[in-house]
Length: 334
Image (cartoon, rainbow, N blue to C red; front, side):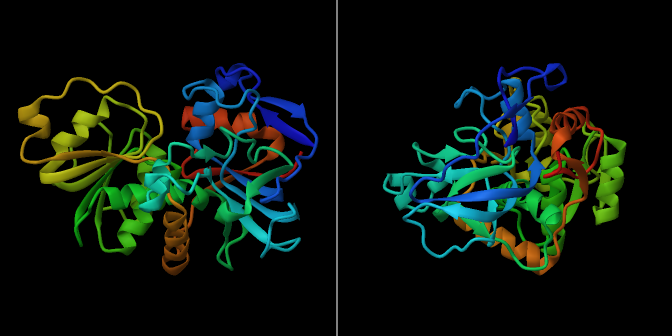
C-alpha cells in the first residue's frame, strides 16, 4: 500500500515526510484492520514530522484523526463486522491496571500508546487499531466532517473542561486553528461569551462568523477580563499574555502536546489573585464519547479543506504556514 513516513524527522518543506510503499498491516489478536477513507491533519502530525516530539517509532506513519471501514480483525475481536465505519483517534492503548487507569484517568497512563507516534497511523491506505479504542461515529456525519472531531474536537473539549469555565462565562481562545474553532462552537452552544486572540486575519474572520464576541490580534488584550482561557497556539510566550487577561480566580488551560519555552512569570501581575495554569494531556475514551455526542447534538462542524492523500506533505506545509483556516482533511486519493 502507499503511505507517508517520517523517515528522518525534519522540516516538512525539506522532505521530513516521504512517500513509501508498505505492506498492508496485519491486525493483532485484539485489533481491527481499517481501510482509511479520510484522515484529519493535526498539528501533532507536524510536531512528529519535524522532530518537535521525540521519535517513538522510527519511520512512523503519522495521522490520528482517521475515519475508515473495518476490513478485517484479529481472532479475539467481537462486535465489529466488515464494512463497519469506525474512527481511530490519538489514544491507542493503555494498560488498564495502573492507578491512573483505575481512577478513570487513562489519559495519564504511564504505559499509554498513541496512533501516529507509537504505531502507524492514517496517512496510508490502511491502519490498525485495538478494537477497544475504536470509536463508533454518529450517523449523519460524512467522513470529511467526522475526521477532525477525532482529535481536534476531542482535545478542544477536554481543554474546555479543564478551563473550568463558569456557566455563561467569558472565554478567551489564544490561537484559532482546527481545535480552537471546534471548541468555540461547543462553548458558544453552551452559553459562553467567546473572545478569540489570533494572528491570522482569516482566522479572525472565521471566529466572528461562528459567533465570537470579538476577534483580535493575539498580542492585544481582550475587550473584557476573562473567566477562563485556553492556549491552543504552541507558543510559550503567550502564557503570561493570557494570564494577564484573566480576571481574579481565572484558569488558563494549555491544550497542546508541545509548547515552546515559557518566559519567567511575575507573581504579582501574572499569577496573583488565585489564577491557575493547567495542562491538558491526551484524552480518555469517555472524553471522546462525550464530545462526539455533544457535537452531534449541537451541530459542531469543522471548516474543512480537502487534500488528496497524495498531497499530505503540502497539507502539513500549509498548516505550518497558516495558509488555511479551520482544518485540513486528507481523502484516500493517490
